[in-house]
Amino acid sequence: MTKADLIIIGGGASGMMAAIVASRLKKSVVLVEKNTELGRKILATGSGRCNLTNRFTVPERYHGADQNFISTILKKFDQFAAISFFENLGIVLKEENLGRIFPITDEAKTIVNALIFELEKNHVKILLNDQARRIEKDNNSFLVTLQSGQIIETTKIVMATGGQASPHLGTSGDAYYWLKNFGHNITPLYPALVPLEIKESWIKDLQGLKIEAKLFTTVGGKLAYEKTGDVLFTHFGLSGPAAMAQAGAIENNMDKDVKIHLDLFPEETTKSLDEKIAKIIETNGAKQIKNSLAGIISSNLAPAILSLLKIDPDKKSAEISKLDRIKISQILKNIELTISGIRPFKEAQVTHGGVDVDEFNPQTLESKKVPGLFVTGELLNVDGDSGGFNLQWAWSTGFIAGTNID
Image (tube, rainbow, N blue to C red; front, side, top):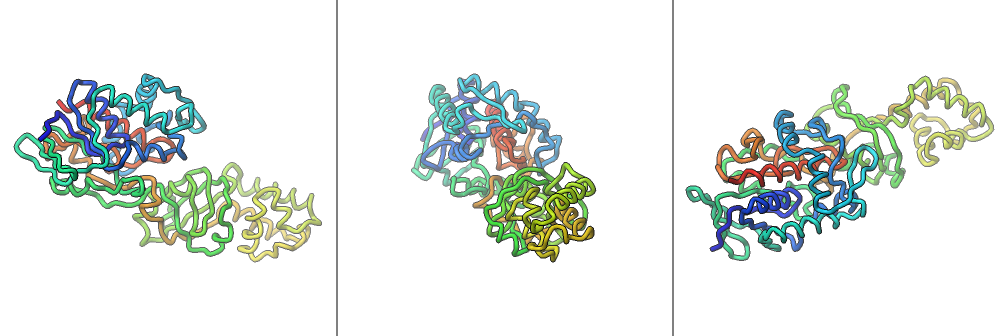
């Protein structure tokens, strides 16, 4: 039997952070990871570039838990603390649009390698290709039996296995079973930051088209969520950051009248857009209307829009009536689509839902029910927007757990 001050189940972002911080406090730490390498999900973030935080991190960019809980966590280790942490590891960072922070190398392995070096420098015992098979509480100690047969005794344990999103990276939600056994409540789990399935068949004809637009979701005619960004048309519906961000507003409302809307010109009013289109038509009267509109929207999208309005795409621009012209302006400001579903966990970036944060102390992330048990990262009932916010949550929660194991 091995004894350690702390055992961490899960070698992702929050698990490695907790291990580093605790080992710096001269604690003996065992880090258990079921994959053959640490940080697999980190390696996949930011298209392999690792968007490790966001300069504009605020509680409002997170969903699920009470905002006071989220605020408490972020205040203890915010985005600027994360930036300093990685700079102190020798990594040069850069800021891109919307406050997204990346390593200057544009390689996620820069981050993972630096974390592994720090773990090894601080003598963290790393067990790869292994996982917990039994976790028992015996008075003030935990006995953790691993798949390899090893038994580790510890007084503190951090659950950092991640949620159910992206199971191909090893995040299959293993810890939910153990947390339930310890008496914790798990809120309903849904895929988040995930593509959307659309009922309208004409969407499929635009597969591969990428545009920038404002997307907004309505439930029962009322605005539920909106985001501006890239939208990708697919064979099943919509993907891209702006579309994937809508899932949180949709998943709990599928039994209601839920719609998604595309505004292709969020910076224009319907009136100003109509004036632009009127000028285009006036200048290009001899052209087919589909070709005239190709000067303002994608040439692939123009025929689809005109067909929706029952306007002949081959019609001469000069023959378009004022009423039809106004209809074109209106639909470009509000293309309404019907949601038929969201894609599964295997296509999601994060999990919405998790262990109920009301059962954990936000100052330490220690369980109120089971002393010595800590939970970090995506396992908690908190998920963030895309853009580095979820990794920031991992760093913040890992840091807090790692500093409070005494």
